[in-house]
Image 1 (spheres, rainbow, N blue to C red):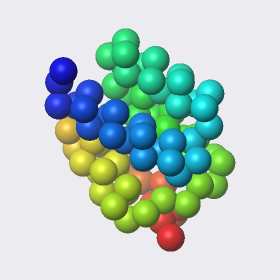
Image 2 (image 1 turned 60 degrees about the horizontal axis):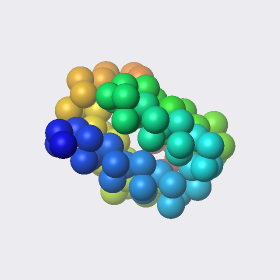
Image 3 (image 1 turned 180 degrees about the horizontal axis):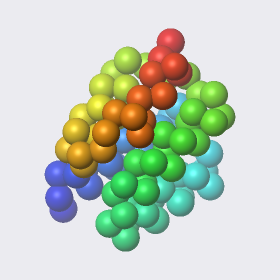
Length: 85
Protein backbone atom coordinates (compact mmCIF):
# COMPACT_ATOMS: atom_id res chain seq x y z
CA UNK A 1 0.00 0.00 0.00
CA UNK A 2 1.29 3.45 -0.93
CA UNK A 3 1.95 6.08 1.75
CA UNK A 4 -0.68 8.36 0.20
CA UNK A 5 -3.29 5.61 0.60
CA UNK A 6 -2.39 5.17 4.26
CA UNK A 7 -2.62 8.93 4.83
CA UNK A 8 -5.95 9.17 3.03
CA UNK A 9 -7.39 6.29 5.08
CA UNK A 10 -6.45 8.15 8.26
CA UNK A 11 -7.94 11.32 6.78
CA UNK A 12 -11.20 9.50 5.99
CA UNK A 13 -11.45 8.02 9.48
CA UNK A 14 -10.92 11.41 11.10
CA UNK A 15 -13.43 13.04 8.73
CA UNK A 16 -15.98 10.38 9.65
CA UNK A 17 -15.45 11.13 13.34
CA UNK A 18 -16.03 14.83 12.58
CA UNK A 19 -19.41 14.06 11.06
CA UNK A 20 -18.82 13.14 7.42
CA UNK A 21 -22.00 11.30 6.42
CA UNK A 22 -21.91 7.57 5.75
CA UNK A 23 -22.87 8.18 2.13
CA UNK A 24 -20.03 10.65 1.57
CA UNK A 25 -17.61 8.43 3.46
CA UNK A 26 -18.49 5.48 1.23
CA UNK A 27 -18.13 7.59 -1.90
CA UNK A 28 -14.72 8.86 -0.77
CA UNK A 29 -13.69 5.30 0.12
CA UNK A 30 -14.68 4.17 -3.37
CA UNK A 31 -12.55 6.93 -4.92
CA UNK A 32 -9.65 5.84 -2.74
CA UNK A 33 -10.04 2.19 -3.76
CA UNK A 34 -10.01 3.29 -7.42
CA UNK A 35 -6.88 5.39 -6.83
CA UNK A 36 -8.78 8.62 -7.48
CA UNK A 37 -6.92 10.34 -4.66
CA UNK A 38 -7.77 13.91 -5.66
CA UNK A 39 -11.49 13.13 -5.84
CA UNK A 40 -11.33 11.39 -2.47
CA UNK A 41 -9.67 14.43 -0.92
CA UNK A 42 -12.00 16.91 -2.63
CA UNK A 43 -15.29 15.27 -1.66
CA UNK A 44 -14.30 15.12 1.99
CA UNK A 45 -13.18 18.75 2.14
CA UNK A 46 -16.23 19.97 0.22
CA UNK A 47 -18.74 17.99 2.25
CA UNK A 48 -17.26 18.93 5.62
CA UNK A 49 -17.33 22.58 4.59
CA UNK A 50 -20.82 22.47 3.06
CA UNK A 51 -22.25 20.76 6.13
CA UNK A 52 -20.48 23.32 8.36
CA UNK A 53 -18.56 20.75 10.39
CA UNK A 54 -16.04 22.10 12.85
CA UNK A 55 -12.48 20.86 12.39
CA UNK A 56 -9.43 20.95 14.63
CA UNK A 57 -6.12 22.57 13.83
CA UNK A 58 -4.52 19.10 13.78
CA UNK A 59 -7.04 17.94 11.16
CA UNK A 60 -6.26 21.01 9.09
CA UNK A 61 -2.55 20.16 9.36
CA UNK A 62 -3.38 16.69 7.99
CA UNK A 63 -5.25 18.35 5.12
CA UNK A 64 -2.24 20.55 4.38
CA UNK A 65 0.11 17.59 4.49
CA UNK A 66 -2.04 15.58 2.08
CA UNK A 67 -2.43 18.55 -0.25
CA UNK A 68 1.32 19.06 -0.32
CA UNK A 69 1.89 15.37 -1.04
CA UNK A 70 -0.67 15.42 -3.85
CA UNK A 71 0.46 18.83 -5.16
CA UNK A 72 -2.96 20.39 -4.61
CA UNK A 73 -2.75 24.21 -4.45
CA UNK A 74 -4.02 25.92 -1.29
CA UNK A 75 -6.66 27.80 -3.29
CA UNK A 76 -8.39 24.43 -3.80
CA UNK A 77 -8.77 23.61 -0.10
CA UNK A 78 -7.83 26.71 1.93
CA UNK A 79 -11.46 27.70 2.44
CA UNK A 80 -11.80 24.89 4.99
CA UNK A 81 -9.68 27.02 7.39
CA UNK A 82 -12.92 28.85 8.20
CA UNK A 83 -14.12 25.70 9.96
CA UNK A 84 -11.27 25.52 12.50
CA UNK A 85 -12.56 26.06 16.05
